[in-house]
Length: 119
Image (cartoon, rainbow, N blue to C red; front, side):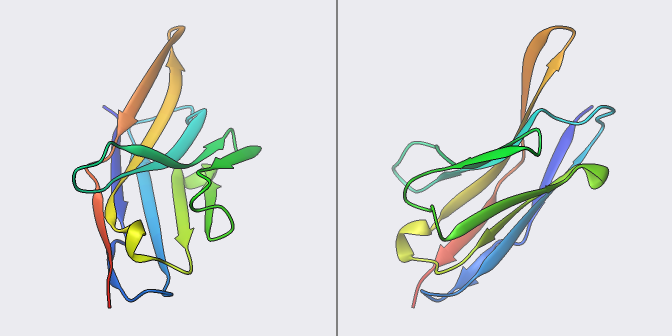
């Protein structure tokens, strides 16, 4: 059974940095996509960043230039380095992974980790 476990959330002042990690277990061949979503109170969950096969990545416009996604396929782990954090980055951050299983696209979610940016 696939499990995604996030770590690295916490509280930080505006302008600070945090690094999120997401370790996947129960997967044999790795994931095609690994990435991060976030959900702020009263808002819909939104894509933050995604890594596709370790060859390309995509970012939400609001985080481009501040956040960096990276991936260690050997460890089935994806990271999100968040710099120059702003109060509007406050949200629960969810790890997400996707792969084809027997020809069907399957997706998985972590339990979420809270990031709070406040002075």
